Length: 66
Length: 344
Image (tube, rainbow over all chains, first blue to last red; front, top):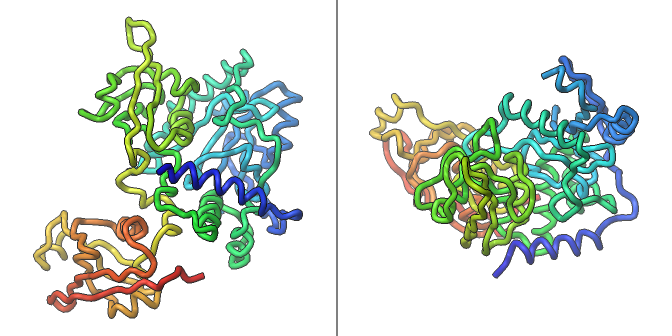
């Protein structure tokens, strides 16, 4: 039996139903500046705007630092 | 590296709070992952990932530089990955905060940072709440090593080695082959490969197009056999504890001198208990400084993390398992009874 597929489909269906109207009740912690040679932005939407304005591609890193 | 980085808008996301999971599906058990994208959020390639044996198996400076150069070339050509289930163009937003168990998980924290692995833990717990949890769900983003393919850490679509008699070997994959596509998806990096494997079926066939020096591109068909996603040592996966009980203790493997003194070899299980923190471990009668030499019939060397992982994958809440410990130079048989349901 295809348990992974069944599990995935069921999760998808139920999680969509379970999506609350109001989310974001968990406060986003402030970012921690990273020292080094690379100039980082810490907000994805800001990165998109900068990418659009500069014509540069984005290098998006997910890194837990707490 | 810094010169290369200047050619990108470098975005560093330090917590999963508010991240759109529909836009960024990846291996949430990782602590580092990267995407190269255009301004619309369309992906050129992924970078990151690991094998069981070490967190940095595919994180090398050479491969990152190569990936950055490839991303720049793709950007110049506007060659993003097509919108598909592999690289979805998210039309809706779904954040980690919306996974039902997340609020309760975070309410116990002093810091409100949602870690990457929290996302997977919450997803698995949600599956558990719905009665859909399966132990196999821990094995997300499987490595091509599960099929016998070992990718070069520096040139990550190059096959460095193929396990003899593996499914990849039998399909005709050879060392030095360059993977071009898997199931029609362009693969340039280890992370690209694991993304395709994540969505591969439990059984079936993978169609892999390879380039081989001096030859035309060829397609190899690799069979996916039952259980192919599972790897030998998932103990690095922080989400593993959701799918089964743990020993309710912590410890350290004995050093060689201590082993010799007890007549134990390097390959024998020998974990000295340093911390006991659950009712079932206390109830079993385990004491500090006991040395666990057998658990649920397993006597081979394991780290404490591997011992926990063994229990997660091979036992269930409500089970009673047998242990043998050495205390004061004498073996003692103990029984550990896990509660019927996991504690909150």
